[in-house]
Length: 419
Image (cartoon, rainbow, N blue to C red; front, side, top):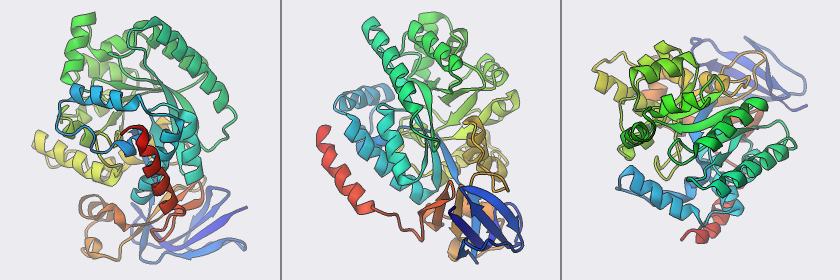
């Protein structure tokens, strides 16, 4: 059984006391002043702080190979361009694009990601081989074509059956693209299929003003109201964006205990909006998480950067410096996502799965006597993350990641598929 002993490490939120953290079999077995296991590898972490691994709750991982391909255009122009590019995407492209994403996520502290894309088996394999924890979906989209809808159902069922052989490192869930690209019949089917098989459901929802206006014209309902009528909303639903909301929308999302994912950098860059209703959604009972979206819109997968931007924008538009306090920000990036996905991680506690960032504080950003989280989120950059442990194994150690050059070389090769 693989064992690691992190010695003399501080834990974020637990003061200045140093701890020893014993990891065995992928689980945090013991946290104490001093602990040990005879066969554990000791790692001296003096001057370092342990932080729970980040959970990126909305990402299109393979889009790392589409950075900068739709700049300076409105959202729906951008979306049409991306859909055109994606016509050349295949399983090999998704595999290597996801391997690149995993490199970037490991460097910036993400240990679990909730992928919303196609060829999920390739994404899953890429993540597992990289050492990260993937949650993947086959994204249903039919664009009002009945034959496509039937084919999508069959494909989703096939992948779900295949997923039963993948092992326990990640999970498969149901993806629905959006209320404007999927017909009512297929959305109802997705909801029923997810419920019948105990699966989470992941959907883009109320991302743009145009999406809301079009839905009201077509159905007399907002996207949230329409999705609720179709049975899509519940405690197992992960709704990405939820940016343009009425008071009734907020009440529905809270009452249904939906997980809402804030994708601030993508929303800002595509000019989708910036007034994410964090306080209102939280008060209503919704769970709030953070996501990067895909690199075709956000351009990077750095959750630490997303946390800072999310907080700064909230403080600015609300004219309230207390908006999105530090503890809330860390929860959005860790335990909230873990709970939404049904994972026993997100906190550094005995009995939890060992997803841990080892942050090196031996630099200028941590010199002041300020609280660690203030320096970590508002001052430092993700290169202060020295090492990353996912499910009890190092995926990055002293900023080194195995096979990085090979991954970048192979990813460059498959780019010919979309050029």
